[in-house]
Length: 454
Image 1 (cartoon, rainbow, N blue to C red):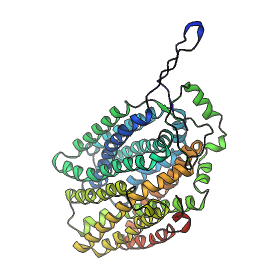
Image 2 (image 1 turned 90 degrees about the horizontal axis):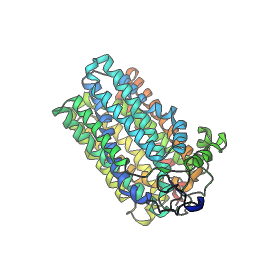
Image 3 (image 1 turned 180 degrees about the vertical axis):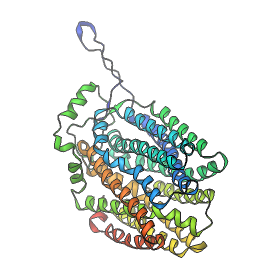
Image 4 (image 1 turned 90 degrees about the vertical axis):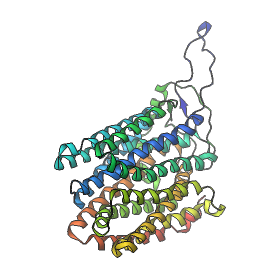
């Protein structure tokens, strides 16, 4: 697959109307190796700060119920489902620098809205938080689809695990550091300045993304990414040619239904898709209730919760960094199975810890978080690499959008059910039950068809 760099080849004609000799354009892989992970870190740091602060402020300051926490989660993720196909079409039609810059500007808007939420009063403040989460969601779906299309198109196959590891480490590092810094920021600076700082970080990510070439990934027929190396050479192509390539595709190949079929094409893809659905659903049911239970049964503060979140997410950084340094047998489908099992099964510990309560229960919750984050760090690299090799380039945008839409459908559904369970059922018993049920996908991902993948 050849990525097109639009701004590197002159159009001027030479003598006799001939085309002037082409100058070699910049290497897009070289530009992305450093800029993309750093921009990812800044962007995800800002996102993690807001994702930590919004529910905490809503519960501790605005007195939000579990239903409100669930509504905030729905606003954060439901738009990503509804706009998945639109995101895929935008990624195929426009250059990736423009797509990523647009997504960052949507995040800046979300952070500025969050900074103004408390000034609107308790009732309107929750509504402003919901609106900010919608803007954050729109930016997230664009970035996710763009990254999953761009990386396999620009980097050779042998580099994919390393690039995905760097991106995963950047994301996990930001997720780990942001809750602690945000907890301190809420205590020292207050809510408005904490969110304003997040907006400034998103603007810094924009400044880095401006420096990368205008890379366009054509959607025309290309070879599958199954084990073949992609090329790093660039070619001169009019932007209209790429647009025509996208428009010539069969309408049926740009639907979410077709993308979903791609994600269910083989036994391994089917199991991993179901595993991801179960993981997201169960996690969000628990997340809708966990903070309320912990605040009720333990002396948890903003700073303490931030420290816990930061410490455990550092294990995700370690998992991402070690993903390609593990023993050879664990750098295959066996590793995907083992660490995928651990990530889902960890929530049985979280549920039991919440049920136990007190210091001992908090220790079990912490242990569950640690196991989840480390295993998730490893399996994220393995799954992304497998999907990049298993799905053809011309199908990657719609396959990624459909995969994300399916998983993010499970997120608001999980938040909604968790929020309702908190009103009509015992939150503690709901956590225990959901944690136990998550052992089922943990066993399924140990299937032979997943263990034998490359």
